[in-house]
Length: 249
Image 1 (cartoon, rainbow, N blue to C red):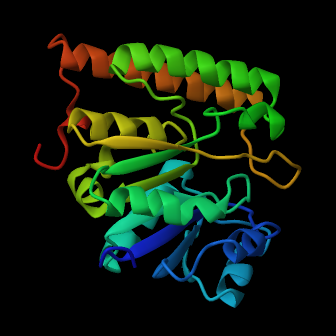
Image 2: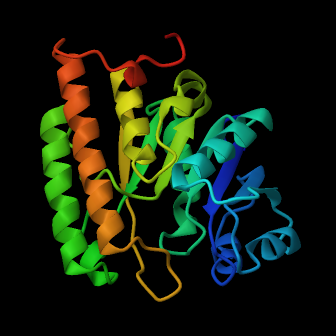
């Protein structure tokens, strides 16, 4: 708990059995009140490992997709009383030791959402990010900043923190069940004028870390561009995009 705010870490998992224990071991349990894992029909024993670690574990009986996994995670965190929710991939690609810092940025009252950036500093390539992914990340981010009117260092991290107020406002059910969910969620939050912060995060690329292939990356890239274009057209009054309207719609 931080500033009397209950902190939950949610872990959207798919075949994370080999890295889950290592990820959990570096989470500061002195400030984290709840650990929630949603398993998206893994085939490698992720659920068994999660239960041995004492995590609150939710199982999808069929693979629903990365976005659908997060929807389940956030709904469970809110239902269990979280005031601050940190979403961390359980593949050990991002440092779990930053959970207190990210949660503190929200608990301070200065920010409503925080994104951990692999691009701030020089950690991405040093951590093994493939050069083509780095170039694509920087290119997409530049276009998104232009269209969304922001100055983020990246939009594509799998490590974020959200206040309860944000999660209760956003209409996440309208977002994609696939990887573009992340960007649609950000677009909704920006449209509602929530305050974002960023923190530098080291990254690790290794065999067991999850990563989408080139074909899925291209599909994701077009989805990201589509999200940014729809956002800009909506803000300019040229096209109404109901996804941005929140639950009040």
